[in-house]
Image 1: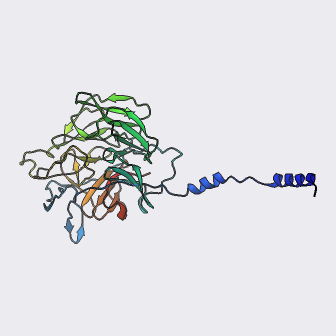
Image 2: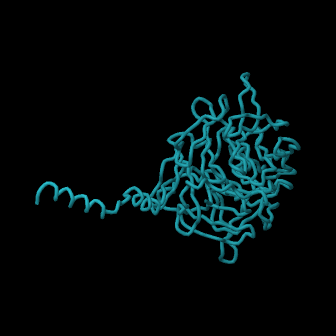
Image 3: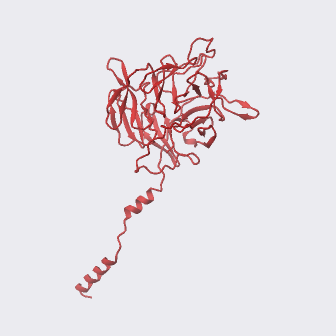
Length: 375
């Protein structure tokens, strides 16, 4: 075969060959692989109530410290079912976000934990570090796509769900006692801006633009929460009382009885400096409840909850779960995720029926449950 014949044969082969897009194949395969994540746990233990051989956890029992037994408050009431908040549906994740597989088989969505000051996400294959520091003032957005925290320079920073693409959205904030609280649409943050003279201004920062708008009214509180319905704020005072306010800070009021130091109206001295989560309609708050002479702790955030309080009456309420409770996370649809002893997670629907019940893996046993994103 001469050179001309060889070139003609090679040209024919080139015309018949079909290109193979190895990148498309690789991406298609990678989309089938789940994503990794996790966080920390620190907490105490509440109590188990035995009734006719079946244990039903009594939310609102005081936290035990040392060998002090927890005593059920006489004001405890059953928790009613609720209708999902019409404004509580989180915004849809960007189209680039992969379909969520979930942290644990049997429970939809992703779980975030605090491991000391490290924020992690639990995955089917282990835990993934989201933030190497900042877990104690971090919060995951309702749509599950972002994480907000306050860095060492007192700036409010937002990162994606993996802790990447960090950007400062507000400078000169305050970290201790003032964790960024997400709005229901995952587009804004309730934060404290330093006034420079030891004072502070509570306000809302737009995550996209960085514009800060002070609340029209300034509640005297800390550890603020923003209800998924968007209309109510929850907070604690420096005297370990809890309160609620409108989204603009107006109509602030303290929860009656709870936190009252008068032993006649509050014989067990039930109180909390640390609200943990608030229901979508703002009517219930999960807290780390203390009683009697138990120490109140410091201004730092407690990533722990052992009671749910009705903010209208100050009464503790009950949920149908088994074991001592260490975390209660209210969901936008009216449901509740409850963590109990022995690493049990129970997902309750808005009607308070059990939707899912799973056991956490051993690798998060000593971490604090910080957040749950259903998507």
